[in-house]
Image 1: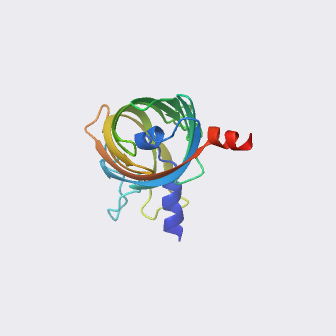
Image 2: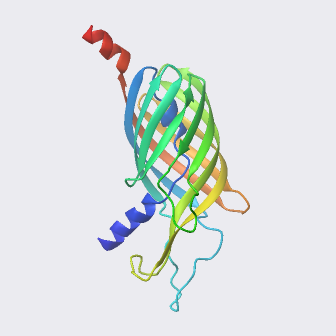
Image 3: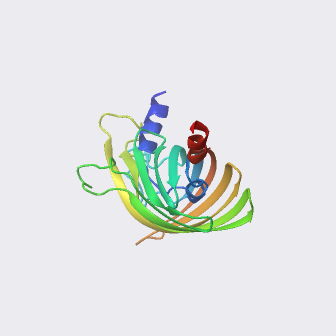
Length: 219
């Protein structure tokens, strides 16, 4: 139980570029709510984590993330909020059409004394190609200031652990496929000023509620 709680706390302090498919799957004049999960592979840090006398590594970024998302769209403008495996909200704002989107985001409540006032944030350009009314293929390019929690302790939740937030800048690109409310997405990110590479595999479900139709029904 202690390891599970500690893992969730560490994952909650992690922040990455959000999904392009969820952002583009919001219909005009509608609210969209959904959830998804991602698996991260690749390099999580740019140096060997501090080891104790027994050769144990400290803990670092958790490679599995869960996320709940709420997005609203009026004409071409999109606003939303998401929770990444924790109660730390990431706020999203941008514009979207059937073919093109620009997504920006910020996670304002991730910080520590050493890194203050640094924050996770980013911007993403998205190109979408509708194949059929319910089937889309899209591509994305992004810049992101990411974060993850690092703890130098072999037993995770030790009171003597050295715990802090690490920030790194990342350039990346992705591709996704959306069918109705379901989407599959792959993103690749390269950490600037290092040789670290990361790979993100997302599966998402998004449910749309048409606001304009609701208003017509009331009238």
